[in-house]
Length: 238
Length: 238
DNA sequence: TTCTTTATCTTGTGATCACAATACAAAGAA
DNA sequence: TTCTTTGTATTGTGATCACAAGATAAAGAA
Image: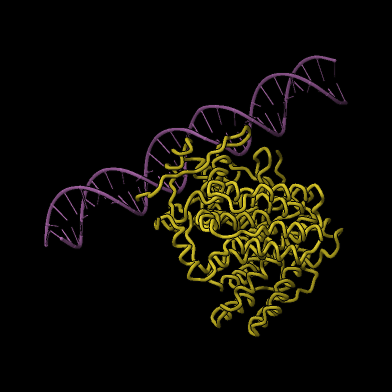
C-alpha cells in the first residue's frame, strides 16, 4: 500500500503519571481534531509506533479507542483509516451538532457566573478571526476550548464526550475548511453567544450557537459545492 | 479488594471472522447495556480473562473501548468500575436522551417505508409489557432494537453511536428499574410512535419518544425517590 | 488495643514474539 | 503484452512475561 503523504502531527510532551497509551491517544486525537491527518489516510500500528517512538502495543489500544469515538474507521480487513465523508452524512453531523450543542448550551446557561464569563471572553479574544493559515491549529484549539468552557459550566453535564466525538468526525475537514475561509469575512458568533448569556436569553444563545456552527462551513452553500469540498478534503485527491 | 458478587453475564458464541477482542467487547457491552453488572462493581483484567477464558490482552482493549463509550469508568489508580450515578447526572442523561433521540426520530421520519414499518410493529409486539422479571434482558434487547430500527431508517444518520453510549450509561440501572416496574402499569408508547409515523406527524413522534423515555423511569417521580433508587442500584448497597 | 511499618499479593502497563491473514510484486506462461 | 500464480512482505491479533505501582494484610512496637 502506497502512503501518499508522511505524517506531520504535533507531538506533545508526555507528562508524569500519564501512561504511554494515554499520551499516544491524546496526540492522535489532537491530530485528527485539528485536521492534521486528511480523510482517506490509512494508518498502521508500525508506522505510528515509529513516528511516536513507542512499541505497537499502546498504538493499538489508542487506535481502537479512537475508532470507538468515530475519529477513525476500522475497515473490513481491520486496517485503520481516517474516514471519508458523504454530503448527506456531513449534513447529518452538522444538524446533530446543532441539536446537541444548543441543548448543552441551554443546560449550562443557569450555571455561567462572572468567573466563567471572564474565561469565555478571554478564550474568544484568543481566536484570530481572518488570520493566517499558520494559526489554524491554534484557532481550532481555542474555538473548541470556548465551547468546552461553556458546556462544562454545567457541573452535571454528560454531553461533552458526545459533542467531542462529532468534532473528531469533522476534524479531518477543517484543514481545507480553514483554507477556504481565508476569503470569507468571519462573523464572531461567540460575541453573540456572550451577549445572550449576559441577557440570560436561552433562545438567543441557541440561535448564536447554531449560527456559529453553520458559519464554520458557510462557504459550502450548495450540495454541489459540499460534494466538491468533501472530495477535495480527501488524501487521494491531492 | 473484596468483590461482593460473582459475574453472571450472558456469553454468546464467537462467530467466524470475529476477533476475540470484538467478541469480548460485544459480550461486556451487552452485559452493561442490560444491567447484568451493577454500578460500583469493579472489574479486573484477570477476572474477566478467567470468566471469558481468554488471555488478558483482548480484555484490556475491550475495557478501554467501553471506557471510551462511558460504559465503564477508569479510576485514578487505573482500576475499572461500572460507574455510579448522581441524581443530577441521571437527569442530564435522560434530558440528553430525549434531545438526541427525538432529533434522530425526526430525521428518520421521511425514510420510514412500509417494510420498516412492519419491522417496527413486529419488534414492538416482541416486547412483553408487564411481564416477569425473567424477560428483562429480552425486553431491554427488543426495546433497543425498536429504537435502533427507527433511527437507522435514515441511511445517513450518525447519531446512533451517541445514543447507544447514553443507553450504556443507563444500562446498569435497568435491573432495579425493571424490578420496580413490575408494579407499574406500562403504557406502550411505541404504539403512539407508530401512529405518529403513519400520520407523518413529527411533533407527535417527538412527544411519543420523549414520553417513552420518561416512562422508563416514571416510578422515580421525586428527587428523593431518584436518589434512593440510585443508591439501591449500586453494588455495595445490596 | 491501636498504630505503624514491612512484606506480599494483585493490579495494570508495555514490550516482544509468533502466527495468521492479506496485499503486493515479480515471474512465468499463454 | 496480459493474465495468472506464487512468493514475499506487511499487516493486525493474541499470548506471555517482566516490571512497576498500589493495596492489603500481618506483625511488631508503643
